[in-house]
Structures are given as structure tokens and as C-alpha cells.
Length: 487
Ligand code: NAD
Image (cartoon, rainbow, N blue to C red; front, side):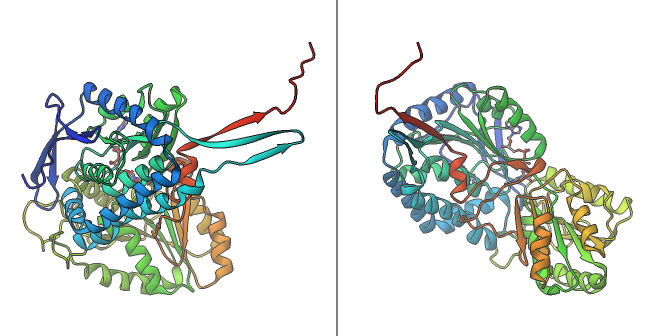
């Protein structure tokens, strides 16, 4: 099989198998072919992974932050050297075109290891608090064993965005990739060993929605970081709360992009296309509700239609391909059913709406789709579709569009396109979201915090802020005199 790893799990520095676990088939989305067969972790594998992480964490945390940082920077270097190989694997795992994976997947993972490896030498510093004669100091300490649970849209990036800050802060991690994309995380685990990390600080185990709860409820786990849907987030956060564990929740969205009538229209169309069609629309922060001012609606739609119809859909391994298939047949079925709802509820189909004729075979391809005249109450405007389906809604008034943009349970991201900078800042100030863009969309460099508000989650990934979610403060009061008591 094309992408069969040595074994399903990577624990304590080596590949481990337990064939008693349920079979997980890794399917190449462009052909429907099974490219690897793995096994979900059995309870014995889970115990082994957590015990290994628990053991390794003590040693790892005893290293100075600068020395830990050196290992992470080395891992970044190896990832960059192997970018093509890792990107090809990511393309097999997800079906995303090589044109994307080569610039967005292992590279963003490497950025994360490089960034946290670099800042950690000073980022764990505490403070000294004078109290007259006495004084106190604070230390930033790791949490212990962290569990990371990933979604299938950015498997390698998610494995690194959780692993890098967790490890930098001195934790060990047990990472469970999505059962849909089990391959990439194993390579990250291998690379960390090669870079000099102690065995057991980064373990990968396979599994599905049955496996996840066993990790979350394990008494030796101090924190859970999930990237997934809102319903899964509710379950995971609930289970973690019952044992008072730390959590980071990176969940779904239905984010707005607001295009005012003074915006550079082509630039706004680029933002809307990036925020709906990149990764075949399977991006959590996508701006799937595009509010376009009525005065520019016709021009916007005409140019958007032409540009959308020019997208090259096809073989993800061909460098020229701009859009690959969806990750799975089930996900394509789900998206097609939303497209049917859009048509049935009266939205105007501008382009797309089905399976492209240009691609033959068994791949899970779908056309990039644009609906106009979408109203706030339509299903396609309310629910996360997680596919290349853009909804264009009309608006005329600033206050009206802000209220409508905020009228959702989600709050992951938002974007504004306008030439008027005071308006841009005024509007983003009122939009309810964790990450917002002005005159661009979906750029998430490692230097800036990323995460959601409302039902889209809490906690932040990337930037120094992420370290706060993988460590805690310890306060030490130092008494300099005799201890006095009233009795
Ligand atoms: P999902 O919620 O179905 O699964 C996510 C992960 O959780 C998988 O690894 C799955 O096995 C595991 N899981 C499922 N049930 C579980 C449970 N009860 N306990 C523990 N683990 C459990 O999501 P998905 O379909 O893989 O990914 C798509 C979703 O992820 C979308 O909603 C998308 O918006 C979201 N997402 C969010 C971000 C972000 O950073 N905010 C990034 C990517 C994807």
C-alpha cells in the first residue's frame, strides 16, 4: 500500500502495533483507493502512551528552556528539509493539492517549532514581587501530560500547533489525529526523536470518537486541546470539566466577511475566494457569509463567477491543480445536501452546485459553489458546511450588517474590506470573533494568536499567548523574618 506506515502508533520513540484495535482505512480522496490500513488504539495502547508521556515529561521539564528550544528548532529544520516528502504525504492523507501543501502544511508546522523553540528561552520567566521585608516570586511551570486531538483538514499543522507550545513549555503530549487523516502526525513524532527529544515526549496514537473519550478521561492527563466541531467540543469540554482539566477548544465557525462599497473589489473577491475555496473549503475560519454592499453586488458577483469558474480542479499531485477533492465521500455527501438545501430554500445559484464533469474516476470532487441572494434565515447561512460553498448576502447599512454578522452562535473569525480605515477599525471592534482581518483574509502566521469566541471555542494557539494555555503559574512567598501568629 502506497502510504502504509511501519505501525499504527508511535510511543516511547518507536512504532508500536496492536492488531486488536479496530481497523482504520486511510483513503486517498482523489481516487477512493485505500492507501494504508491502521488500527485504533486499544486500552492497552492508551495506557502505554500515557505512561510513556508521564515518565518522559519529568526528564524533559528538567531541561533548561533554551535546550528544549534547541530540539524544537532542529525539528523545524528537519521538517523544512523534508518539506516535499511531508507535503506529498499530506496530499495523500487529505487530497489537498500539492500546490497548497507545499506552502501551507509542513511549513506552518515548522514555523511553529521554530517560533516556540526560539521564544521559550525567555517565555517561561517568572517575576519577583517585593513585599517590604518579605518577597515573592512566580514560576511558570508545565501542566504535565497533555492530550491533543486533531481534525482532518490540517493534520500536520494541527499536530505541530499543539505539539510545539506544549513541548516548549515542558509538557509531554499524546496526540490523536483524526481517524480520517492518520498518517502525517506519525512523521512529526519520528522527526522529534531525530531532533533529540527524549523518547515519550511526543506520542501518537490512532483512534476515532470511541478512543478520544478514553484519553480525555484518563486521570494522568492534565490538559486536553481539541480541534474539531462544536458538538465534539461540547462533549470533550464537558468530560474534561468533570475532572477540572485544562482545555483549549478550537472549534467550528460561520464567519462573516463584510465588503463595503468603497472596497477594492478584486481584492475583496480574492479574500472571499481564499476564505471559501482554499483546502476545498475545509477551513474552520472560512468567511462563509460574504456580506456585499448592494451598490457593488452585480460587479462583485460577475467577477467572482468568472474567477471561480477558472479554478483548476483535478489531480492533487499535479503542481498546476488549484483545487483537489473533499477529504471523504461522507463529507462530500454532507456538502451536496447543503447545496440542495440552498436551492430548495430559494438562494440563487451563481456557479457550481454539483460534481465537476471535468474530473473522472472515484475521487470525492465537488464544484466550488457560489450562492447569491442568501438570507440570514436560510440553513446555508446558519450552519457550518465545511466545503467550498460561498453564501453572498446583501446589505446597505453599517449598523445593520454588524448586527447580522454577529447573529450567530459562532465567533471564530471575521473580515472587513473597505478603503476607509476608521470604518474598518470601528467595524472590527464590534464584530464578535477571536481573529479578524482587515483587507485580507485567513492569514494565520505563527506570531499572532489564533482562536475563537462564543461557541467557536476558547484558548489560543500560536504566539506567546499559546504558552499560557500549556503552563500555569506557581507563586512562592518568601518569609524573611520570624513567622508570627495571633495565638
Ligand atoms: P470532529 O469534531 O468530528 O472530530 C475532531 C476530532 O475529535 C477527531 O479526531 C475525532 O476522532 C475526535 N472525537 C470525536 N468525538 C470525540 C469525543 N467524544 N471525545 C474525544 N474526541 C472525539 O471534527 P472533524 O470533522 O474532524 O473536523 C471538522 C471540524 O473541525 C469543523 O467543525 C471545523 O470547523 C473544525 N476545525 C476547527 C479548527 C480551529 O482551529 N478552530 C481548525 C480545523 C477544524
